[in-house]
Length: 291
Image 1 (cartoon, one colour):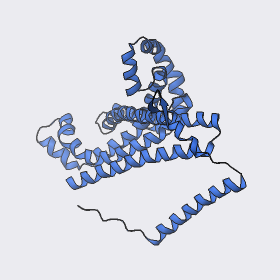
Image 2 (tube, rainbow, N blue to C red):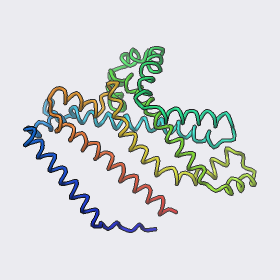
Image 3 (spheres, helix red, strand yellow):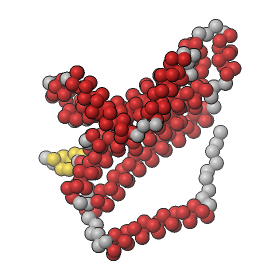
Image 4 (cartoon, rainbow, N blue to C red):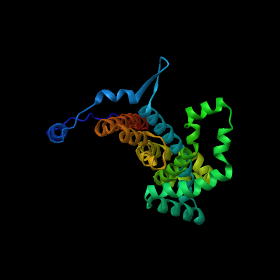
C-alpha cells in the first residue's frame, strides 16, 4: 500500500508567509523597540567545552542527554505499567478492572506538577531513606559511577533522577494503558471466540492470538507517546533534575541571554521530537506495508 505524497495548496503558502512575517516582526520589535542586543556568538560555548584539548558536552548538551535518558527510562517503566494496567482493563476480573480504571482516572485528572511533588516529597523521600539510596550510590566503586553517569545521570543526582523516572513513568503509563486497551479492543470478537473454541485459555488467547494483532494498532500511538514523554520531561526541572529545561533556566539566570538560550533550547527539542516523529511514521508505514 503506497501513500500519496501531499501536495501543498495555496493555504499552506499563506500560513508559511504569515509565520515568516511573524518571526521577522518579532525580531524587528526586539531590536528596534526593546533595543535588545543579540549575542549568538556566546551560545556555542554552552553546547561544547574544551577540556584539556578534548571537546566535551557542556550545559545544554548535557541537559539534552539527560532528557533523552530520562525519557527512555520513563517510557520503559510506563510501557510496563501501561501494558499491565491495559490488560487488567480488558480482563474478566472486576477487581483488576477497578484498580486499572482508578489508576487511569486519578493520574489523567491530576496536574502532573502535583504528581511530581507527591512523588518527590512523600514517595521518593520515604523510599530513598528506607533504601539508603544516596549512601549506596556513593559507596559504589568509581567505575560504576562512570556507568551510572552514562546510563542514568550523575551519581549525585540519582535520587532526583529515580523520582523523575517513577513520576513520569506513572503519568505516561496512564495514557499507555488506554492505548493498550484500545488496541486489544480493536481485535474482532470472533478472534476470541475462535481461539476459545480451539481450547486456548484466557492467557493463551491474549499471548498467541489477540496481542500479535493488537500490536499493529498499539505501536504507532506508542511511538507518539514517547514524543509526549520527551516534552513532558521539561516539568521535572521543578525538582532540580538537570535536564534541558533546567539547564536553560540556570543559564538564563546567570547570563540574561533570554531569547538566545530559549530559542536554542526550542530548536533542540524540535530536532529531537521531529526525529522521533519521522522514525514513528517510518514504523507506521512499515506496519501498513506488512499488512
